[in-house]
Length: 283
Image (cartoon, one colour):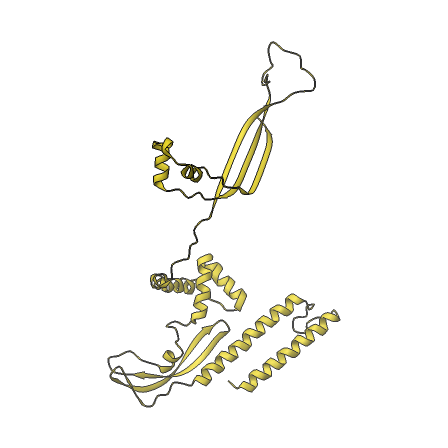
């Protein structure tokens, strides 16, 4: 991939953005899609063009990396590998598919080896590690069908649900090793205690006019009517540090407690962030 071609594509892309701004000012239409130019359409167009440029840059990366030609004979693990064929490899990236030209070496009784695979740390499957990471995160949240739909909407690349399923299966093999290497989560000790309380009380209704006393009430009619008053309280307060010995002493021999111990047991803890809520509902 020639870098001059990449520079030319970038310059053309910049000129397109300038033309989009001119079309928006004149309320014109995009000559490519025949639609009115808006910020949303320009944003989408820029993103897709950046993916194309990214694909060219990835292709140029592997072009600069070379084919991994280490000579006709390559010594590896005490064996002599012979250079046989230049076998291309298709790698699926978030920018699209790129072709990697690479030499393959073979030794009798051993698996084939390509120096480029090791140099660039290429995956064993067609999808790049970055694609596998994105698909893995999407598959955890959504179904495989929804995952491939979202991936195509973002990057314009079609994947099969089976591919997403295979990626998740392969990633799950490394979960235990990954979890064992994680440092323990830093936990801060709780400094405040949350207190929640509520109470309800029946409140009799006092009418402005006294109703006539009836010896027998009609069906469904009650003699006394009340409403229920509900009161809620929530606040936080600092913890009160007491030793198990002090609590046991206060239960068994409270008369032997000293003044300092009593202060420690009954120290006033100021409430913070007090929140009240009350309501009156028909009972």
